[in-house]
Length: 210
Image (cartoon, rainbow, N blue to C red):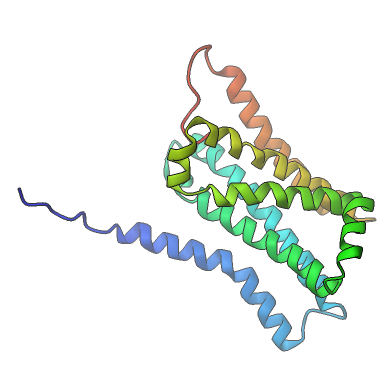
């Protein structure tokens, strides 16, 4: 029997390459800002804030993939979910590393005191800790190993979104408009999931990847 190799889907490869480029664009702009010295009077604060913003945006974008699939009736959004989630972890790690290395200078005692005493740092660090197992188990191999437990574990992303929004709300002291927008987006995404779950007939299995 002659085996034929499946031709590569160049359209999908191109879209995935574009998604990688768009996800890396904020980092490229930050690097350019550092090199051009255009990040303002406090470049460390600018890097911290922008990496945190993009981490939260990508967490919310990842949460939007399943509702988007249902609303469009197309499976393609789910194919980007893992990529978006890993970049969310990437920017969250840059956010934490900037705070630990550049802001506090790896002064570990101060870091531990901030985690314990400052609520916005406590919830932000908790959100990052929850992202770690999600990133580590994002592969198909881990999906097979964990079975149904994989879906249960990855529901932590709901808590990550909530903690990320709370971190931003507690961090901002005056203008709450931006974190409230993120809070509204999160409430909409979780509300859609709850609505669909309540409307699902008893005994019907949830959609794959929900």
